[in-house]
Each structure stands twice: as C-alpha cells, then as structure tokens.
Image (tube, one colour):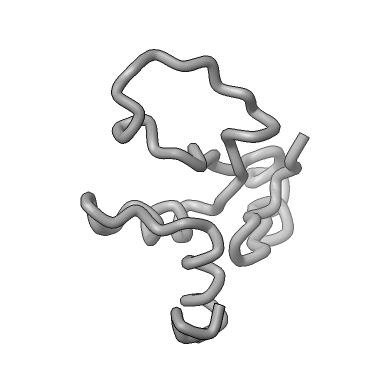
Length: 84
C-alpha cells in the first residue's frame, strides 16, 4: 500500500534499527477521527499515511491544531506558510 517509510521526513525504521525496525511504521489518519463525530469506513489508500513516531507527535502536538502532511513537510523544510 503506502510502504514503511515516513511520508513526511523519509525516516525508515529498518534502515536505522535493522531487524528490530523491520516492517514498523505508525499510521496517521489524514482526517483526525476526533473531528468526524460519527462512525466511518476507513479506506487505507485514501485515509491513512505512514509516518514515523516523531512526525506523528509533531502532527498532533497541539490538540486544537492538527497539522496536515503538507504543513509538517513545510516545517521540516523550513518553508514559511505563505510560501506553500
């Protein structure tokens, strides 16, 4: 599907941790479930993306302001919000 490399920063657990990190990644709901307010069917191809633990924490660091993947990538690349 999406693989096991962080879509935001490119981190791959197996490349860093070897066998211990093999086939490990976290997944992030593109639309936070807490904002939906109803039961939905999750389409893994459209609704989930692989992210490393650090990126996942940064996405959800502020409860009332969940970053999009694009916003996180901009932070990682030190791009000002008005430039993307």
